[in-house]
Length: 428
Ligand code: GLU
Image 1 (cartoon, rainbow, N blue to C red):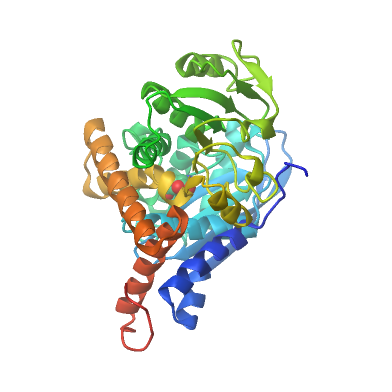
Image 2: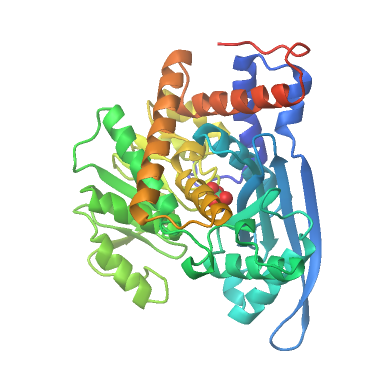
C-alpha cells in the first residue's frame, strides 16, 4: 500500500466533520444547509504589469463563509494550488475557529493563484494592490478583515492597508491584520500562530498524561507556523527530532538545535537544505516517525487514509489548516491517536489578529506581556472547553470543537433572526 497522500477535497473534509456535529446537535435541515455554505463567493481576474513590461493575468478569490458572529476574518494565500474548493474550506474553518476560540468574528479566506517566489517585490506589491482594488467593496474594518496566510506576510498586509486607505482618502489600519509594527501591527502577531500551537501542544500533553519534559516532536513545515512552533517547543525543553521544508526533511533522534537551525535558515536564503548534524529523510517518512508528537504545519491533506495506518505518534497537533483529511479520522481514532484539530490548535494567529484589530480600533498599543498573557488565557480556556465537551459527548476533540463552534453560530443566527421558536435545535 502506498503511503503517499491522496489529494482530497478539503471542503468535503470540512463538511464531513460539520455534518457529524450537526447530527449530534440535531440541527434543523434549512439551518444546517445555511451554515455550511459560504455567504458570498467573489472570483476576480486582474492584470498586472510585470517588471519586463509584459501584462500578466491572475485569478483571485475572496470567500466570505459567515458574518454571524461578527465581521468576517481570515487570511490571503498566495500559492499556485489555490482553488475555489480550497478557499471555501479555509473560509469555513475560519468561522469555526473564531467561534470555538470565542472571538467576535465570522470567517473568510482569500487567495491568488500565483507563485510568490517567481515575482519581484515590486511585482508582488502591484499584484497585492490590484487584488485590493478589485475587492475594495468587500473589505472593511467592520465588514471583512484579511490577514496573512501561506505565501503572504507583513509586506502584503501593509500594501493592502495602504491601497485601501488611498481608495478611502484616510488611513484605515483596522482593515487588515498581520501588518508590520510601524504600520499598525501588533507585537507578537508574527509568532502568534506558532506560540499558540506550542501552548496547545503542552496543554494536550499534560491532559493526556504524556508530558515528560523530553517528549519527542516532528514538525512538518518550516514556514512561519512550523518555525515558531519548533522554537517555542524547543525552548520548553521538548526534543524536536525532525523538521522539514518544501525541499528537505531532516532527522536527528538526539534532537535538533532549533535556534541554531533558524540562524542557518536565515543565512541560507530561508532554506534548511544542507543543515549539518542531521540526516536527510524522505518527506513522507517524517510523518511516520516514532515520536510522541507530530505537528503537520504545512498544507492540507497530508495525512489521509493512505498513510494514517502507519502513523506512530501518540498526539497530532494540527499547525496547518486541514492537514488531516476526514477519511483518516476514524483510522487515527481506532489507533488511539489524539488529534488536536486545526480550529483549536492554530487559533493563536487569529486571536492576536483580533488583538491587533482591537488596538487599531481603540488607538492603543499593547505591551508584549499583555498580548501573550491574553493569548495564553484564551487558548487555555478554549482547549479546556473542547476537552470537556469531548468527554461529555464521548467524541474526539475535533468533533467536540465542531459541536461547540456550530452550536454557537447556530444559536447566534437564530437569535439574530428571531428563529428561536421556528427551528428545532436540541439543547444539551
Ligand atoms: N491565516 C491565519 C489562519 O488561518 C490567520 C487568519 C487571521 O489572522 O485572520 O488562521
